[in-house]
Every structure is written in structure tokens, then in C-alpha cells.
Image (cartoon, rainbow, N blue to C red; front, side, top):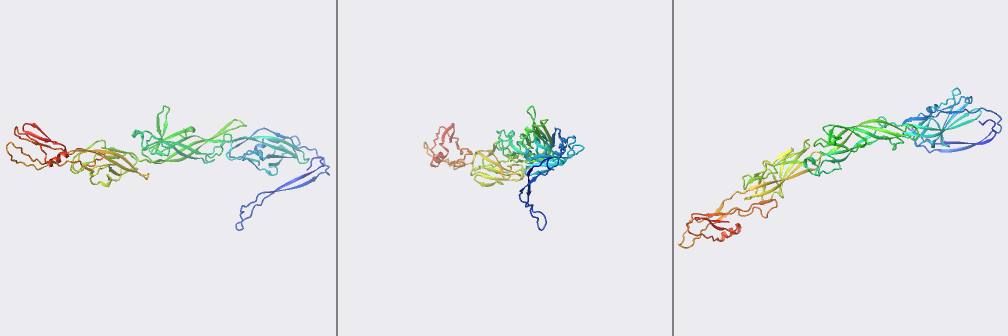
Length: 568
């Protein structure tokens, strides 16, 4: 339709798009989905209104706008047309009776990810367009089919221009208004049933243990901070991590975070450590931490516990947004996520408590059956029953020494003692040390206890030493003494004593570093009832000279008038 009195000529371009929707499966009739790209086709028509003689002075209606903000909620379709019906109308001035109303929105004016529904899309100009009649009685325009869909998880505000057009369909008269719409989108936190955040718990470090992973409160050793896991009997620092369902990354689009979390654990597994204002620490089964404390949650497992620890989590997630165009300037929404997470406490081979090793075990030289080591005992510190002793090894046993049955000689100074299965305590009752013949002195033996934690593949060993003192016992003396002699007056008489000690040399030769041996035995030969003033002189025979070399020089002394002694 040409405006009243128009007699000119113009070209009208008609554009279309064609797309091949693909073939259907011959057997099922279901489209195969192999659609083609769209192809545009244009054609031009020339319209000539030179014969136009009609005159119509009807005017298009006046557009009335009431300023208001379009509101919506995150991840909800905005009823844009319904709200526009309360903002836009046509004045009841008599010009509205033959009008149609058009809403035109340029696609490029919308924020990224937004689109308009319930309209036609002008692919030539990139515009969303809808045309509806104007109610002649009320001036209302019914745009309820028009919707605004926003990008996923968007909350915030923005504005965009729209074009409003009234057209009188009898005269072709047109009235156009431009309007900038402000849109305010409220946040909706993505918790079930809106979204499914995922929570996990990470181990930051384990404190309170020494280099052997034993509690420093028991060993007194320096503390070593372990960053490769949560270890048994340690003080474990945990970090609560959350993968939230909202993909927005800034406050002006709506940013979600964990505001606080309450964590609970079964008492059989351990306790969280709550630091009080006065610095003291209180164990608790449930602890509430703020957002700034989520990476510094302290936990102590139950004594000797190792394995999985299940933690119940009740987290408050908040979605905060700031607004640049509309008031108030901020808004938020929050919700709770209740879930359960788990971490593992790594087992540690507990210490072995030795008893009887701080005292010297004393026995006699050539004691029958050997010297008992039964005073030495071992006790595992583990109380949860997950550890046991595997075997005991007596080490540094010098050559010539024996460990009595049931110990078994492994060679190289090592003797194995079998421990009953699943033992948590054991002693060396029935295990005897048998020194070499004639040995007296001190010997230091090594003790190694092998233990096994059920959850670990390797066997651990704990070592100590035990000192044994063998007290000397005098041996018999070999002697071949001639008891009757004859001689000549004033001539010397040689007494053939022929005495020799049996313990006359070291039992260990060469010496061993962990053994201190007493010297061999010395001799005291006493000659009594010697008549005064008969003098005695000592003249060693060749055999006695040998004794002198072995035992040192013999000396002749006269402790009394009738007694003479030969001593070493």
C-alpha cells in the first residue's frame, strides 16, 4: 500500500533462504539429519504507483511508553512481551482504529548468548520482528508470545534498543519510536535442583610426626612436615574444594562461591581440631568453617587408625551479583548442598617398645645352657589390630658365639627367631646366648623386630641393642708336680712344678669390635713350709719359659718366712 497521493516508482527486493533438510531412511522413514547449509536467493520487483489517485489522510496512532525495567531470573525465560504490554500502548486519540503495531529488535544489540523468541527473524537485516494488531478500544498491543532467553547462568543487568512502529493499514501512514529497554536479571544459586555442585577434599599436609612418621609427642624428635598425604597419627590439614555449577566468572554476570561449610565425622575415625580464641585446641566431631578457612581445616585421625575417612558436608553456596544500570546495586541468592566426601589416611608402621634392653644381662662363663635373653621383650604401639610382628633377628653375633634353639642361624652373625602369627608382643624367653669356651667379658648384640601393617605391602624394621656381660669363672689348672726330691747338702735342688692354666689365650682372635674380652687367666703358685733360712730361686725350664711368654714373667716373692710364691 502506498501513502496517500504517492505516484512514484521503487524497487522492492524479495529475499529467501533455502535449506535441504536431508533424506529419510528408506527403512524407518526417520530423517538422517544430513541437512545442508542455507543458501540465500534475492529477486527484485519494481512497483509503479503512477496510476494512484486515492487520497487517505488517516494517521498512524501515537505510541505511548511508560518507562519500566524488564525483570527476570537466572536461567529462566524472560516474558519480555508480557512486560512490554505494560510499558507500550497506542494512544486513544482516534488514530488507533486501523493500526498494526510492530516490534523490531536488532540481533546484534543483544548481549552475547541472548536471543528473542516468538518473532520472525529477518535474516537480511538481522532483526527479530513481530507485528500484532492494536486493540482499537483500549490501545493495547498483545505481545505475549515474545520471549527473551539469556546466556546460561547469567545474572546482572544490561540494556538494548528496540524500535516501535504503528502503521495505519488504510492510509499507509507510519509512526516510529525508539526505546532503550533495561533488563535486570536476579541470581538463582545453582544447587539441587538447579545444578549439581561437586565437592572434594584435598590433603594439604601432615604435621606432628618425625622423619620416621612417628608422633613427636612420643619420640621427642624434630617435626617433619609431610606434604605427600594424610598419615596415621598426624595432624592433617585439609582443603575443601568445590566445583560449582554456575559457569559465570565475574560479579557482573553472577559469581557463585562457598560461603561456609559444616563438616562432620564419625568419632571412630577421628576428630576435627577447633582452635579457640585463647589458642587452645578442642577436638570436635562437627566444625563450621567460613570461606576463608576452607583450605585450612585441621583433622586428627583416631589413634592408630588408617583407611578411608568419610566426611559429611553441609555447604552454603551463595550467588552474588552487582548491577551497573539498575537499583539496588547488589543482590544474592543462596542455598545448601548436602553431600559426603572421603579421603584416605595412609597407614604407618607403628613404633615398637623395647623392654629389658636398657639393663645389662649378666651370666657366668661357661654357664650351663647359655645365658638367657628372656629379659628382652617387644610390644607394638598399634592398638587397632592392623599390625603384627613377623619375626625377630638377633644380629652382630660374633663367630664362636651361638644362639640356642629354637633360633636359626642365617649366617653372617644373624640368627632368626620365629614369632607366632598375629603377635603384637613377644619376648626372648627360651633364647640363650652361648659364648665360646673360656670367654668372659662384654658383648653387644643387635635386635631387629620386623613388623607388618595390613594395609602396607612392605615390612618395617625396628632396631635396638642389648648388652651381655659374661663374668669370669676360674678354670682348673693342669699340673704335673714331682712331690719327692733328693739332693746333696749345700747343693741346690730343682723343684719341677709343671703347672699350666687351661684358659691361657683369647677366645676371639682377631678381636671383634662389639666384644670386649677379659685377659686370659693368670697363675699363683704358692710354696709353703719352706725351712728357714733355705732360699728359693726360680729358674724356669723351657716349658715354663713358654708359660712366661704367654702369661708374662713369673716373679718369686716371700710373703712370710716359710712361704714362697711364684706369681705372674
